[in-house]
Figure 1 (spheres, rainbow, N blue to C red):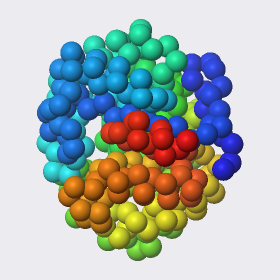
Figure 2: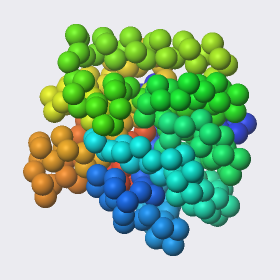
Figure 3: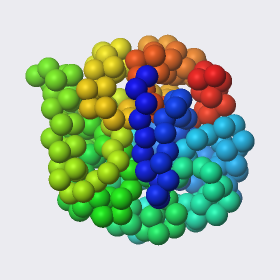
Amino acid sequence: MIKRSINIRGDLFEFQKPLVMGIVNMTPDSFFDGGNYNNFDLAKIRVDEMVRDGADILDIGGYSTRPGADLIPIEEEWERIKDIIEYTSLKYKNIIISVDTFRSGIARNAFDLGAHIINDISGGNYDKHMFKTVSELKMPYVLMHIRGTPKTMMSKTNYKDLLPDIIDYFKKKIDLLYDLGALDIVIDPGLGFAKDYQQNLDLINNLNLFQIFDLPVLVGISRKSFVKKKYGENKTLEGTLELNEIALNNGANIIRVHDVRENKRLIK
């Protein structure tokens, strides 16, 4: 695996081994655990548990991006996540905090509360100020591939040629970010976002092609519908682990998961 690094508030962080990003959904309607942790007390329990289980990064989100999800106001999104960002930042100095948002205003507020990374499912498509904001703040930025919106994306799986199309998308976006002065970019092929069942599997099996950018690669496979389709309703954890193993063998640097303990064990 190629050795890569990102700058976390002035400190160089090197990817000497794959990292586990634990998902903290502060939403009532996320596809797997929506509503389980959508108040501050429940979220604190979730954060503490994931840290004990060995999470390297916590990805905190207040906006569901499941297929068909509705728009919510920026004020509601921020209200959902601000307290748990502050709690995590104050209590766990060695944990990297990622915020799952496509809104530049949320990114700036999260930075002020101690967040380190912005994880933007839209690749800058939903907020024209996002690239400029993360570049000014010098925040590492997860650049994901998507077409359409969470409401429309599953009608946009008609690629001319899947892998070259996604590589071209990343090249254009990466050039834009670098032109604005961005320092650290992580790429995410966007599994489950405007990809059908077979396209998701093709991406996992060809993940090594994205090493052309010499940037860290994140994958979000955990318990998604294509995992359920391949392995069955009751084996989404086993399926996630098997597909994450393939992704890691093909060069993934970060795996974004609901089940931290089991995926840390997989890496070990």
